[in-house]
Amino acid sequence: MRRFGVLAGVLAVGLMLRLHALSPYIFYPDGYQSLMVARNLQTAHRAVATMGPGGLLYPDLFGWTRPAYSALIALGSGLGLRPVVAAQGINMMAGLAAIVLAYHLGGRLLASRRAGLAAAALLAVSYGPVVWGGFVLSEALSVLMLLLVIWQAGRRHDFALGALLALATLTRYEYAILLLPTLAFAVRPFSWARVGAVLGSYMLLVALAFALIHPFAYGPAAALAQMGGLPLITLGLMTAVLLVALAGKFLTQNVKNSPLRSVIVALPAILAVTALIVLPSARGFLATDPLIAIAAVTGLTLMLRRPQHRALALYLLAGVTLLAVIYARINPTMDRYWTHLIPFLLLPAAYAVITLCRRRAMLALFALLFTIQVIISAIGLRGEPGNPWFQPGYEAVAARRITGLVPSNAVIVAALPEPYYLITGRTTQSIADRPPYIFLPPELKSRPLYIIQDEAMRRLFPRFSALLDEKLQDNKAAQLKVGTDFRYITQIIPEHQPLTMYKTNQSELTAVIH
Image (tube, rainbow, N blue to C red; front, side, top):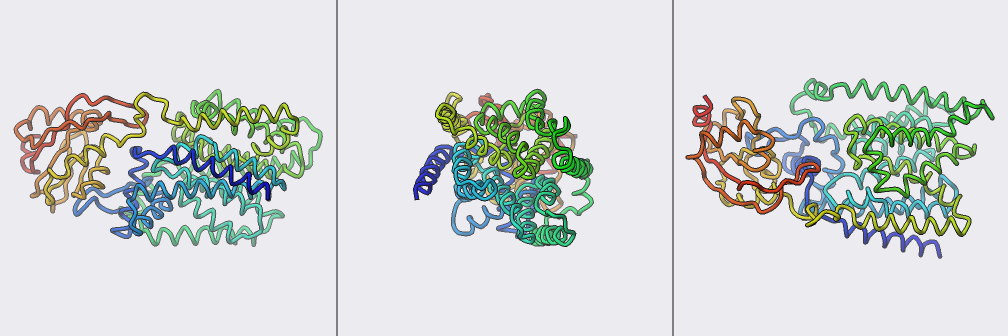
């Protein structure tokens, strides 16, 4: 009964931190992509649709590759919640469920209730799940899905494991890379029948999801072209995992007391030091999640030294390595991506805590580090003057300001079209920074165009913005000050000029351009 009281206290801390992190700001493009796909699923019953009749076809390939999160947002919207509220509610429930699951995971895979409590406590105060869970981002749900995969991999329910792997992949497409190491850990001793059961349920659920959301509005060939070299990279990484798994099994089981075995045991520290030297995102993760980062490296080293935990340690290490390589390829400076490594770091970190904190001095040190982690996570992104990440975004405010100024039959043209479509409901198109700049289908060529020259237009499409300044000054329909900074990725840019809205049409714009 006492441990359930401790777990309740941990949940309370996790809940307070997550409530404190809630923000109305929506990151571009990730947050808007999730909201747009949710709207498409709710209104068009498909992941890819146009922004109003004749509007921009949206999103492209990688924009709809997290349909699980968007589907849940659409479900919440169908129940009467505002999409942003639905998304944050999903994050809150997923975050608390992940804490409870971490408790059960530690108890099952490490055979220790103390390890379960340590895992739950570490996850409750971890910076990534707390901070990014406050925004319309899929990180909170993704952490829960990966914990479910790890939990199921320790059981012998192959169809359920395949289904959870599929759901995880539908939450974040890059999780497909985890299929092979999960099979290597879960299917022991090896059995083709069990592998077939996992793969069969995995492919069946993924195919069913694609059949329901039918995202290939532009055809599979175009989708594959957008993926570039990702399939080859994925194949290469999966092959490398297979070779490492075979080598790891040989080295740790058959070559006892050899120098090669010592190298395997030292591998977590070697990889951690390499990541810190090479990747800015790894250094960012250490700065914001030092407790899990340090404890996980220590715990993996300890687990690799013990035969009963060695297979689990190799599996978790493989998951960490593969995801780190994928995210380094996507963006080596984005420490937010390291949130997705936390499910694989959590159990080793908990193992280090229960192993090393048997002495009072170490327990006091852990309590100090835990307190520091709580403070880091509570501050989160609030450290900047004015709390810019806890105010509505420039583009959202701008879209609300112009809603009553744009007639229902007009076509909005904007550099960042998603917020203007979601908030105004008007048909929306985007532009290119080369002639003819705007590509409209025939049915829109006679309708009025309302071109939004905002901070995004001026910075992302300077040639077209200069054309507006030079040749469309007589077409100004409105000019207004948005009143907030323009935030794009990690940049915070003061509003230098007011938003200007130009009214024109396709034929007039074509004549001006030429």
